[in-house]
Length: 157
Length: 388
Ligand SMILES: [Zn+2]
Image (cartoon, rainbow over the protein chains, first blue to last red):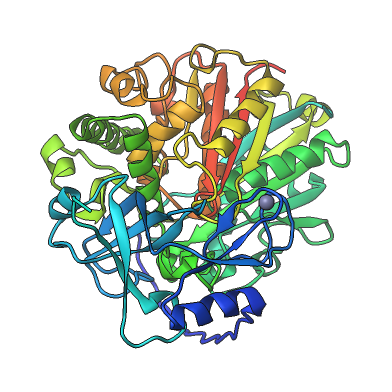
């Protein structure tokens, strides 16, 4: 392109401390005990997971807690072969939207326990409807990544 | 419905890595261009609308203050509109509202981005809430790839067919960009190059995804009175639509994407369009990803669900086809995000006024401009016509 002139480097560090509120706090404390907690809407009977404090459709406050299934079905997924900013962990990773049994909406997480070498190897193990199960890290921090990943269940179950 | 609204003209910068100028100088380039093209005096504008991506992209917050001078806004009302990727169409709609309401006769609308100065993927990460979604769908490509995968499965499109259609779009748009003097990436690609490019996030490969660009776009929106005074050919806003989804990814269906369907239908209804494929002469669809472009054809009713790949491969949406899409090369070749949607409106206006130059669609009278924003959450559509 055109001639380039001087540039000035500037780095802004801006730490935040986000208040999680009672609902997220309870959900994350549940993860520490290897439980996935949701909240159920009294009006539309939908169970949301991760737990939410209000129903986005009915605007009802949600205080009915349920421990939800740790198994569910793959809704959609993508494979990132190379690192980019914000990727969870190191590439290659598979990001997945899982519908946990008995819940509505979907649960974002990672897929593991399969060959992640290429998109082709992932395609062999994963499709919409593939049954998957949460696999937990031994050490829990009250964080989404206390669940290590979701792993496909063997075909006959 | 408000008063009729005209678009008097536009100014686009050349896009690319613009380290030849500082950011205010880049914005000035677009603003100066629109005043020069139209012959309007900056003194005559009643107000300014400006927008970009989140401040983190620029590293300077509230850039409409920083750019107050080059935006010629001193002593005048200034609005900022910001809806992520759909910012440009939101800017145009804001300008439209201002004129249609009768509160102004002449409004300068400007969008810009200088993406090479910051970190686009990091900025995109800040669009997501920090408790849950940010861990998994940071950055743009992943979430759009999941949307594409969901759509492919829903309509049972064979992988080789969708790949072939996406490859055709990539080759055609990168080739079309040679005819657009403002475009960033212009390239002659082969099928093999596109099909075998490295995977960004499956199924999206390198040539299926837009670049990061620096650039700005400025437009003048005017009342009928101001348009008559100008005495030149202008574009008329025939319809506008804007619609959004719930915040959480997974709460809404992204394959038969309701907010894309509804934004287009709002605009069609206002413009009196019943059959968009027949009645539109050209459409500037927001296409940062080839796969998503195909999905938009269906959501906008250019064809039925599940038909976009076949019709694309038949050439229905090519430059010489029944409904040419993004003859400018589109977002796939040029993406200065805060300006990108406004570029779509500018291109749609150039088409219906016969000023699009080498990529003019002959005789175009009705055009569509579109932009998509948020983390797969919002769509905005504007229909332009050559007649009031
Ligand atoms: Zn409810």
